[in-house]
Image (cartoon, rainbow, N blue to C red; front, side):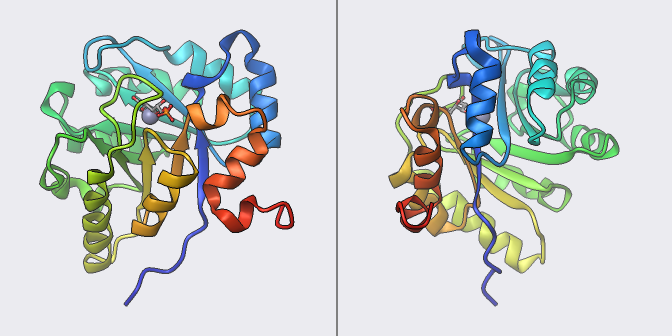
Length: 231
Ligand code: DX5
Ligand code: ZN
C-alpha cells in the first residue's frame, strides 16, 4: 500500500538568519509561511563549529508561536536536554553516532517523557542500519544531506537512498514518523527529496539569503505553490 500523502512542512534554519535583527527575521519568516523554526545547536566538539545554546532558543521561543525544531549536534545531548526543553523546544533531534556519546534509546525516552517530538538523525557517512533499532521510538527521522556543522554546503544526492529505505521501513512496520531533510535544500533539491518521500524541509541559505522569503518558501513546496496564481 502506498504511503498517504503528507503536507510538506518548511522549517527555516535560523543559522542563516541575521542575528542582529532576529525579531524582524522571525516576523518575516513567519509571515512568509514557515511551518517550524529549525534551531541548529553546535558545540565545537561533535561538529567543528559553535552556534548557540538554550538561551538563544528561549529568545526565539518568545519571538514566534511556531514549533521549534531543535537539532542537537552536540556531545552528551542527554545532559543538555532539560535546558532545551525548558527553553521551549517542541521537537528535539539527536544524532545516532557513537561520537555523540550517549545512550540513544534512553535519550529518545527522555525526549518522549518531556512531551516533545522525538527526532533522530545520522551523518551522511553513517549507515542507515544504525538507525533501525530506534525507528519504532521516533516521530521524526532527519536525513542529513550535508556533513553537519555549516550552512551553505552542497546537497548530497546520494543520501536519497536513505529516504527510500526509511519509507520502506515505515511502510513495512506501520510506523508514522515524518522524514525531514537538512542541508543544501533549495527548490531543485527539495523536489528531489520530496519525490523520494521526505515531507519536512529544512533550509537556511535558500530562505534567509533570498530577497522574498515567501517566494523562497513557496518554491520549496513545489512549482504549483510557487506560481503567482497559487500564492
Ligand atoms: C548543518 C545544519 C543545517 C544548516 C542548513 O549542519 O544542520 O540545518 O543550517 O543550512 P543550508 O540550508 O544553508 O544548507
Ligand atoms: Zn539542522
